[in-house]
Length: 449
Image (cartoon, rainbow, N blue to C red):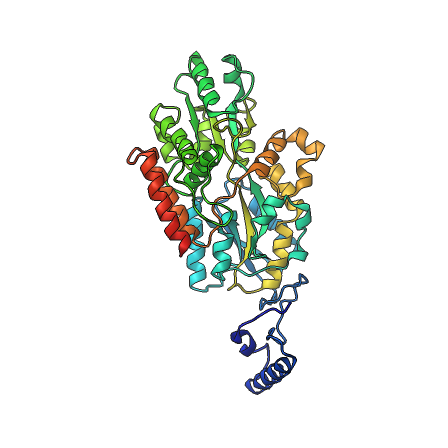
């Protein structure tokens, strides 16, 4: 198999090469390859990644770099960076914190890329941004064989791939969990967490009869008009047997199954199962509401576990798989992967830092200090860890059952459309039927571009 490259790759000057030497090289390569009847494969240019892939990325240069990610609400990132900086005093990494809002993070990273700025080196990308950033050549393909992908959960590894190449490396996975108040359910005579939406509502009705449940609402997720609403909407649709987009990115939301999923959210707001204030919740607002004792049930990520253990509900909660229409539901596959900006300097340092940050040792640290879901399979099966973190088996099940959000190049347009139409439905400005019909049309336009 011969790899095709562009004329631009052929005529690109090599490091230290004069114009005369470049012309000579091009003519020699062209003549030799034409004589052999081959297609040009970028003479003298290879990324040397050991994966059998060719390209133009050169992982050269050592020195200071930056690590760019959303705000570290857990307080665990800087200590890991400090450990790197102590080991590499001449190649220090500076943490650039972006807003907690995922949409704002993505926008700032795109703005940096569009200006071809070298201010950002290593990026922490939401797993669903891989295709978009890779297709626009904002991030470099990285050498697969230099990372222990065979030790990671397969669904997690797949989030880093684009057209067969590895563009992002799993740093942490994520699966949605149902947090629930064990003390309140026990007093209400409920011994097991719900597996269906109907059971959850019935359990809430029993809890609300308790004197100590005065002012407590039933359920919340993340329903503000931002990326979290896309996550919650997708989970509702998938948990009712529907599909947002198929494996090829083709939309399929104007269906009876998708309507059942959206109707769960819409009807829950109408009947008070989901409190009105939850329409303003992102991850942190919903976490705080649960920790303050305002909710019986909460859909959120595993990072909440360690923080809730330090709150007023410590020892009074547990986690379970998300409920669905007829049984356990499906989480949206979450998590963050590391990517290398195409415009960065000191890429040799950056690649080494990515290996350090995504190592099993670092994953174990993030698990122990911040309840962050590790990409490594072995950590979920470690008896000592499971005893210390009893939610691990539930989390592993959540990740393995998880469904990716749309993996499409035009991700910004797709998520904006989902957020717009889902929010219109849950706030009552559109019917579920009309919102899904309009969403189907919008997604078809976006994915056909």
